[in-house]
Amino acid sequence: MSVGTGRGAAITGWGSALPPTVVTNADITTLFETSDEWIVERSGIRRRHHASGPFVADADRAPTEPADGIGSTATLAIEAGRLALERAGLTGSDIGLLVLCTTSPDQAVPATSAAVSSALGVAGGAMDLNAACAGFTYGLVTATGMIGAGIDRVLLIGAETLTRVTNFADRTNAFLFGDGAGAVVLEAVPGPGCLLGWDLGVDGSLVPLLYADHDGPGMAMRGQEVFRRAVRVTVASAEASLERAKVGIDEIALFVPHQANIRIMEAVASRLGLPQSRVASVIDETGNTSSASIPLALVDAASAGRLTDGDVVLLAGFGAGMTWASAVWRWGG
Image 1 (cartoon, rainbow, N blue to C red):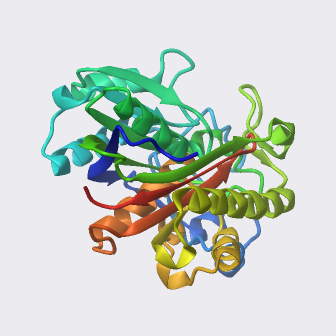
Image 2: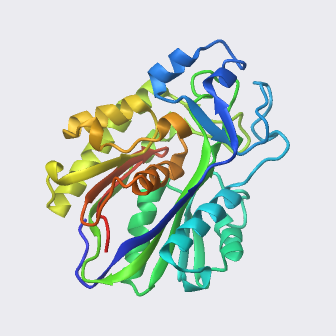
C-alpha cells in the first residue's frame, strides 16, 4: 500500500550495538566437523557476535543454559537506542512511542520494550513487535503509521539474542546466527514523508519451515526450502513496494536486504536487477541477527557515508512464519 498525504516520517538518528564476544568460524569448527571455507561459501559469514561471555565450545550445552556473563536483548537495544537518540539530538523524554522488534525477548512477560523504555526514559508508550526476521520493516511501517496518527517521534529498534535459541549441536545452522541491535529515530514531517511504498505479508502454512519451540532444543530449519521460498517472496514483495511507490529499480541508491545468507541476498539482488555495489551487507561480520539485521546494515551504510539526502532506499526481507516485508524509503528529511 502507499502512504497518504497528511503527515509523514523521516529518519533523523541511528545507532547500533554488538556484543563484545566475537565468535569466528574457527571457533565453530570446535563444535563439529566443518571449515571456514565451507561456512563462508554457503553463508558469507566469517564471524558473529554472541551476547554470552567467552565462547564455550560445547555442542551439548542447552541454548537456555548460556555461558556466564550473558548479555540481553534489552541491553543491546538500550545501547543502540541511546546512540540513535544522541545522533538525533534527543532524549527519551522526546519520544512518544518505542517499538522494539524482536523474536528473542528477555522474558515471556513483560515485553522487553518495558525495560528498554525505562532505561532510556521514554515519555510515551512502548511495545514489542515480533514478525521474526521481517520485524524491523514491519516496525518501520507501524512507526510511520503512528506518526501519521499524531505521535511526533518514535524510537524504532531491532534487537536480538538469537544465540539463546540456537541449537549448537545442529551443524546445518549453528554457524548462522548472531546477536546485535540497530535503531533509528523517526520524526514527523509535513506532507507524505519518506515512506514511499510498502508491502507486508505472511503465509502461516509455512510455519514448519523455521521455528523454535519454548521447550525445544533450539532453532529448527528446513534450509533448502527456506532458501527457495525466501528468494521468491522477497523479490515479489520488493517489486510490489516499488510499484506502489512508483519508483524504478534504477532509482534505488541502496538495497538493504535481511542479512540471512549471502546466497539469498545475491539471488534477490540479481533477480531485481541490482548490482552488488548497491547492496548493503554486514553478514560477514554479524551473521543472521533476525530483526536486527536490516537496521545493522542500514546504520553501517549511513555511518560509512553511503547515503545522502534524497537517496531512495529499498529494504526487504523474510522471516519465520513465513513473514515478508519491504519498504521504499527516501533518505533525509
